[in-house]
Length: 382
Image (cartoon, rainbow, N blue to C red):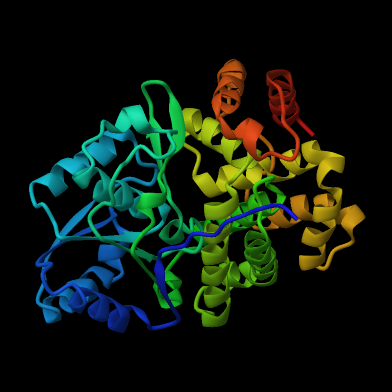
C-alpha cells in the first residue's frame, strides 16, 4: 500500500440556511477583527439580496464591512491586482469571498498577497510561493462547481503570455467555508449545468490521478454519484433544495478530492483553450471530458468501470452515454462553434505540455503530437 497524507485545515459549515448563523459565529470568534473586506462578482450577490444579508450580519457582529464587487467571470492578473490595490487601501482584518469560483479564488489570493509581498504574474503556476498564512479568509460559494472553498488553488489568467494556471499553496486554504445550498437556488440553468460539470471533472480527475489517496477516492466516487443522480434535476428544477444540496455536496467533495490528488489533462486542455476563446470553465470541462477519457484508454479501464457504476450505466457503453448526457445538458462536446481556430493548435499544445503535472499525476502522459491530433479530431465535423 502506498504512503499518503491528508491535509484539510478548513472548518466547514454545511446545510440549507446555515449562512447567517455560521457567519455571525465566525465573525464573533474574531473579536479584534474590525475591518472586513467582502469580495464578490459583478452582479449576482447584489441582485439576489445576499449582499444586504451579509452586510446586516456583519453589522450585528460589530464589524465594519466593505464590498469589492468587480471580479469578472474569468479573473486576469489585472483584475486580481485591481482587487489587491483596493484591499491595500483598506487593510482588512478578515477577507470574505462570496460567489462562484472566480470571486473565491480572487479573495483567496488577495488574502495571501496582503501578507506575502509577491508579484502575482511571477507566481502563476508555482507551488508554494508564500512563506506565511494570509489574512484570515472565509469562503462562501453561491454555485456548486469549483470547490474553491476547500482547495489551495487560485486560478488566474495572464493574457500577456498567454497562460491560465493556479497559484498553489498549502497555506492558502480558506480558514472557514460556509456551504449553504439555498444560495444556489437562483443560479440559472446554464450556470448550474456548467458548475455541475466542473464538480464532476474534479471528482473524475482526482479519482484517476496517480496522486489519489484512499480518502480522495472516497470523496471523488461519492461526488461522481451525486452529480449523475442530481445535476439534471438541479438544472430543470432550480428550486429543488434536495438536488441543490446534493450538488453543493458534490462540489465540496470534488474540491476536497483535487486538493489532495490534483486535476489532470481535462483541466490542462480547458485552461489552455479558455486563454484564447474566453469559454466558461465548466464548458471547457464538458468539451474535453470524453476525448481525454478515451485517450487514457486501457490505463483507466478498472477505474472507469467504477465511475460508470455511479451512473448505473454499462461500462462498455459509458463514454457514449456520457457524451449524450453532456449534450442533453446543452454543454459543448466538440470544438465546432467554440471559437477555436486551428492556428492556435500548436500554442495550446505547448501550454498543456508546459504544465508540470503532465508528468506527475496523469494515468497516461500525452506528447505534443497527441494533443494536436486530439484537437484536430475535435475540430472536424462529425
